[in-house]
Amino acid sequence: MSFSATLLQEVDMPMPRSSNATASAFGWDFQSNAAIMLMLKNIERASQVKVEGESEDIEIALSDGKILMAQAKAVENPNNFGNVKTKLKEGLRTLSEASKMPNVEQLVFVTNSPNPFNNIRTMFMFTNDINMVPFFELPPSCQKSINDICTKNEYSIDTAILTICVMQFHGKAEDERYKVLRSMITEFLNELDVQGVTTGQILSLWQHSFTVNASQRTTAITKESMVWPIIAIRCEVHETDSELEDYDASDVEEILRKYRAVINNNSERFEFISKVLSDFYDFYPAMKSKERRNRFISEKWEQYKCDLDLKSADPTIEKIVICLTLSKVLRNRQVIDSIKGKVKL
Image (tube, rainbow, N blue to C red):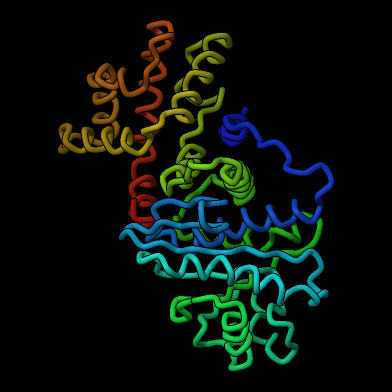
């Protein structure tokens, strides 16, 4: 079983909220994918995201203490504009409450309608795959629509921090519905210069995680937990790996099971990696790389017993798993350092 499959098994899927709510299911799907999109847009500054937060559909905490608040409103039929102004009104209603919070940096109304103002003459503003248009860049007629809604309904919104976002998200087939997000993830992985990790793997893992998060009242998705699957897949171990060639099939199965539990379930993953790399960089820095790595693992593996918590394992298996973990981290240290640097971890 691959890391991505194991990671997917870690979290139980939430119970359906309605037995016959196709429109609602589409809306929840859009909300989770919009949250992924906004996190990627803000990945360097973001610290965590909550889907279905206390105030808004999407709440992103930024590293400087500021917050991005977003309302996500989807339409199933992109050619039906009859309800788009109602959705805009609903979004502005809750954003008006968020606007009163002193630490809000940006308010975002995100939809998948190519005509969010039901005005054919302003559709040109929203023809790209993703359109992020601040209030002051909107055509005057769109600004007037927002101001009229706020005035009529006594909403108080700081339009200086309001952005209208349109993300193309239509169709029943996954290749069609998720093509924009797939493109964003592909670009993200290319920027990280990560090999051996596919867009499909990360999209599936993130969609699962963000959908589950919407059903949890208080738990947020940290940037660390969002990025971790990329590193976990990079550190994947297979039955045919050279480190396992001296063990029989039954031992290999147990080693892989314990190893994947360590990689997937360690709640302090980045802290552990940082500790290992820091220790390694201080360990005989003048020594040749391969000799240095092997000697470090041989001499230092016991000091990580508490970090990996393999007390239930046979002592021999415990040592193998710890050494294997250290080996994978050290072999991928340049990639890990690069990822952490580029996403500001």
